Image 1 (cartoon, rainbow, N blue to C red):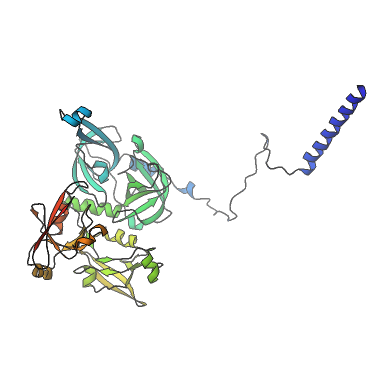
Image 2: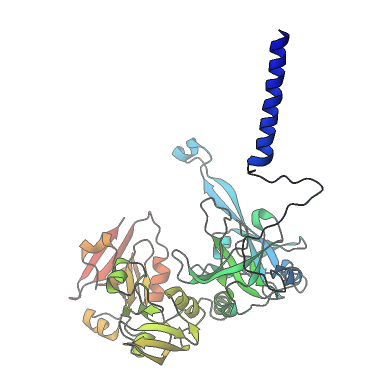
Length: 464
């Protein structure tokens, strides 16, 4: 028994020596042990040396811009009264309708000391009551002065008992990619929240919006809509409007309406009561589409002119299919969103200098913007335009709008080329009239329109 115990002790001791020798001299550790007496060595992830001034962020002072902005950004509360049955019995027997308030919140930016506030249209849409709370916690009722759903900009006003702090519009065209910016608003009703980031891109196209946006990585969440995007000088360069997210919350990118567009919309609302939108009068081919790839124009640096609208500024300036627009008023145009973003800040009658590449020859031509002559009818998808003198003579009418395009679902009805003269029992005079009347169409409502064919005969179309 003693001999067995001795052998066991020798075996354990020999094993310990062998293991210790392996650990000490042979094994390569997969981790580093850091004691309290020694700091771990820091290793940079790039071999490119930084500048003598450092990484740059320490030289940027956000405090001045933040102090200027927080007092000019307000909390907007939208109260909408919904009426509906309170229970299943009311639904079937109609014994009463219950009013339920629905509350939405957002932000706004004071742009004048007498209480004018710019915000997003979707923040104040369908409101029955609007309330604005300032950074000092004072609350005022607000009235809507005007809205523009296309740009998602709205103008509201409060009557305060004193002059209010406000922000001045900056020039968003001068904003540079990589420039530091602050987003100020009220995310999740957390008032006066300031976040920082950089301009990630300019002239970014978004979904169905017929304009371009400033893209930033400053954190923006629900409730930030309508708030301020400012540079480090405190200049208002954008109105925070949207995020791209599968969760509904910030995941890295946010988008703002450029200040030059917002300013122009606000000035139009205050001066004319609506937005004066000038158009160039061209259409292009989406890059990446099979047609663009087939024609070899998928990688063009500029905007390819696929079609020129009759009686437009581009038509008068003799732009033609195949032209490539390279620059407008010394602003480089590399893609369609660059073009529409710049033109959105202009009005009908404004003259632009357009640089055009045609058959390897670059030249400049003045183009005067005109009022939009076409529109897409909501929910129906018809593209319509004002009548020319020739159209009026052909169709023997002085009123109406011409159908120049229809979606696939209506191709079988032979509608293209006909003239819409009434919506329900109401006459349609022109594009402005059509925009108002067709704006009342609902997705699930019943719609009837009356048309003229080239023989002057009336045709009626009922759409359900």
